[in-house]
Image (tube, rainbow, N blue to C red; front, side):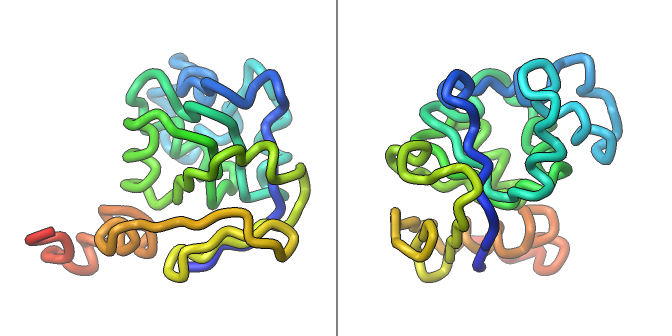
Length: 169
């Protein structure tokens, strides 16, 4: 699975400890999935949906997606066109929700310092590399079953295609 796109680096004051409540506020949790995107980062970065549409690689700092277990945070990012998230580290529940929904979360030490806003990012999950403007900036390694989930676009699409895909893993 190869992902190519421009980077949207979160502003310095928003890079670390991005709480899922900031990604999508609680008042929007009951909206249909298709209506979440316009409200992503609404309180702190109201132009995020438009900016993310042109830049499908979101770059954050440490502890991206900390806070509650709301999967709507990942769904809102996907709805905005985000196809890859690079961060120094992730909140554990956000990371698992991202995998389950088909949004690759890649741990990249110092991601926000390595990647400039609008730079061209390429990631190949099968080959295990991340490049920025043609230069390798990190390695990524997922177990086979996680890569299968991401390549299928999430755990549900994978299981719809093959109900036994994860048996014995």
